[in-house]
Length: 257
Image (tube, rainbow, N blue to C red):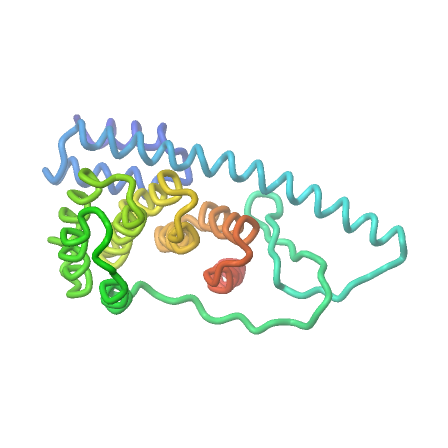
C-alpha cells in the first residue's frame, strides 16, 4: 500500500477536516509502527467520532434557530438586554454568537496548555477507599500516571478496563488514558480516548473534563471547527461544570484566530 492510497483512504473516511488525522495514521503505517489492519481500525474509529460531531453540529444549529426566535420575541416586545458572554451558541459552521442575558462582561481565563498528568492522579489515589473491584490494580496504574510514566500506565489502565469495564473507577481509567495521550501530544489517540469516556460512561463524573480535553485536542491539531463543536456542546449540555469557563476561554481564543 503506497502513500497515495493511504492518504486517499484516510481523507475519504474523515473528510477535509480530518486530513491531519488521516496523515498521522498514514505515517504510522509507513513507518512500520502499525499494520494495515490497525490503520483501518484507527481510520474507522476516527470516522465514527466525526460522524457523531456532524450530528452534534445539527443539534447546535437547531439551538441557534431557537435562540434567534427568542431574540425576535424580545425585540418585538421592545425589550433589550445587555449582552454578557456567559453562553455561546454556534453560528453558521464555526461562527460564534453570544446569547442575550443580563449582566456585565466577564473576564475569561487564558487557555491552559498541555500539562503532565501528575498531581491530580496523586490526589485521586489518596481518595481511594479500597472498596472497589480491582482497586489495587487501578492504584498501581494511577501511580504510574502520577510519576508521568504513561508508557507503562496506559497498558495497565487498558488491562484494568478489560477486567473491570463497568465499575465506579472505569470512567476514570478511560479518562487517564486520554490524559496520558494528551500529555504526550498524541492528540489523535487522545481524541479517541476522551470520546470513549463520553460514549461508554455518559453518566460518569469525567464527562465534562473529557469533552474539554477532546475539544483542546482538536484545537491542537488545527481543527478549529470540530474544537468549537465539542466545546459548544459542553457549554450547552453541562453548564454546571467547572470546565465550562475554560471552554469559553478556548472558544474566544479560537475566534481571535
